[in-house]
Each structure stands twice: as C-alpha cells, then as structure tokens.
Length: 209
Image (tube, rainbow, N blue to C red; front, side, top):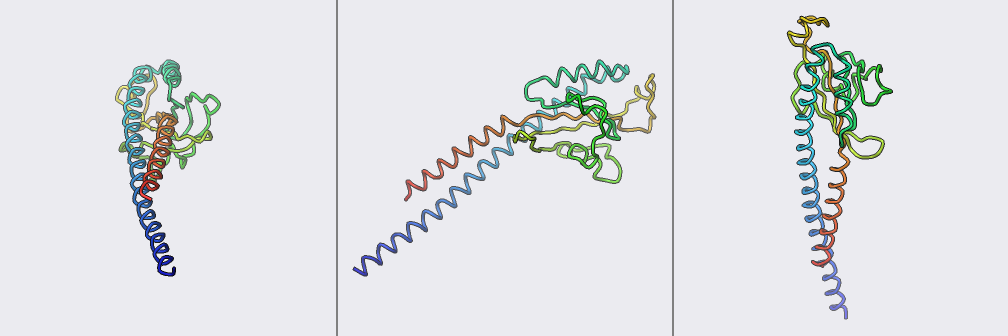
C-alpha cells in the first residue's frame, strides 16, 4: 500500500511539474505574441498619424501664409470631426492654445512639462527638430481606452517673415500642431486577442494534463 501511495504521489508531482512548466512556457509565448502584436499595431498607427499630421499641416499652410487663421481653423475643425480623431489643436511655442476642437481650452496655457510638450521642452530650450518617436505619446483618457498624440512643429518660412504677419527670420518654430487619435479600436482588438490567447493556453495545458 505504501508503494502504491508513493507512486500516486510521484505521479501527482510529475503532473503538477509538467503542467506548471507547460503553463509557464505557453503563457510566456502568449504574452510575447500579444505584446508584439500591440507594438506592431501601435507602430502602424504612428506611421498613419505622422502622414495624417503632415496632411493637415499642408492643408492649412496656405491659409496661414495668407494670415487667414479662421480659414485654417475651419479646416482643422472639419478634420477633427473625422472618425477616430479625438482632438486637433494648435498652440504657440510658449504654450498658449490658439485653436482646439475642444473649445473650452482655447486661450489656456499648456503645461510645458505636460505630455504634449515634454519632448520639446525636456532640454533647456525647445528643440527645433524632433525625430518621429519624440513626437509621439500614448496615454489613457478618462474613458479608459488609450490615445495617441502626435505633435508637429510649425516652422517659420521666408514667406512668413515677408508678409503682413511678420515673424523674425531668426525664429525657427512658430507653433505646434497637436493631433490626438483614439486607440479604442486597437485596445478592443488587443483585448480580444489576449482572451483568445489565454483560452488557447489554458486549453492546451488541460489537454496536456
């Protein structure tokens, strides 16, 4: 009887050990898959946001050169109504919000150490050229899904220092275009992938057991 009990005990230990190792291995693989998939989708969103931001900049460029700010604001207002666009705004390099699709914040001052300004003001003076990764931030909103923000500096051009709205030629950056896109769809897809991966991992471990 003792030998039988010893064999049962050994079988149980082997079962627990094998299933534990399998659960750890499969769980790690599933986590890596979800992490890589999320990174790939965020990277795709960043490239799309960069192209979108450049399109907006080109769309308002002529109106800004003609000092027709209301036309530029109307263009951004229309763009801000597109699906997936959470907010569009423009603020000066000192942080004053000139335009925002979130009307109540117009005229306010953006915190230079906040998430939308830190990349430019992390140094002692604003950076004049930002690499793409430095223009991006991903953060949560009160509704719990993530948002992707993209800042694009609005640079001074020769035409800007020769027209009726004169800017000093030495001034390199006139302001910042800040576009925020919703990642609600990405979050939902990643959550669904996470549940599928967890279910498959649990099923595999149970089948092995």
